[in-house]
Length: 287
Ligand SMILES: Cc1ncc(COP(=O)(O)O)c(C=O)c1O
Image 1 (tube, rainbow, N blue to C red):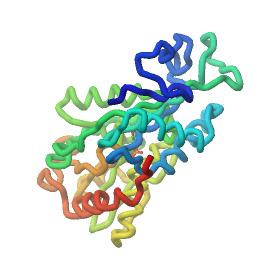
Image 2: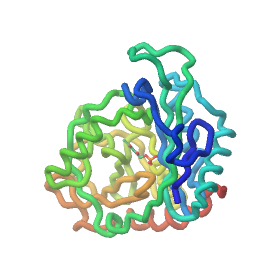
Image 3: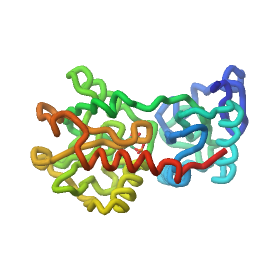
Image 4: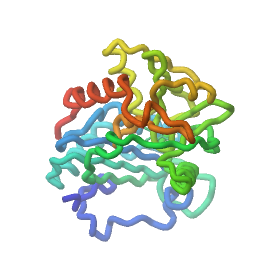
């Protein structure tokens, strides 16, 4: 299983000599590239269209010439899943870097982008669902294009490490007194039976799970407000949760010292969580 990778349009054995990156790849040197993480359920791809929209958006925003058309990529993703006979729950990782050239900040126009995709098994994060996660507030020192799913994740890497060193699971970023998002997930707060989450702009990644949760909340008749959340509002929140492709919906049990909802799934979070699970089969793309 996972023996085969999609490598620049070809399905290759992962041990094939061709599966290697040049030291002059701009992704290697500058993190000059973008990526996607997509959930696979029983071998089928979840919310593929939205993920592809975001991948093409990320490439466009940093001026990478896509090395595939949308249809070609879909076909190749199918091929890599099929080649691995992958029918379990897993993750599909896709990465596109700008390509290779002698090291220079300035990029050459029309470089041949380098890309790959792999499928890896992923078990449902049952422990997190049952016990939730704790988050540590940290100042958001990332660049102001967090809407691009760029490979440059150093601030996120350092923030997660700081959180863990301090006994927390995840960072929760704030900037200018406004709560933005977590280190690798979006943040939601529940107040008076309604959801509040940061609007999609350059301060956060427009999460696919966030988008799905908003859609499903509306179907359930739960009001959703996409607006900035002041740090002071955290005190008064009834429930908080995070959303991310691998984790789906995870309750936040503690923010800094403050315990939320007695450390368990709140009623609204639970309702959304169940509905999210129920709806998964409707958004699957079979290969
Ligand atoms: C910074 C950040 N925000 C939010 C998300 C959640 O996005 P999605 O729901 O598309 O996985 C991620 C996922 O990796 C992320 O890195």
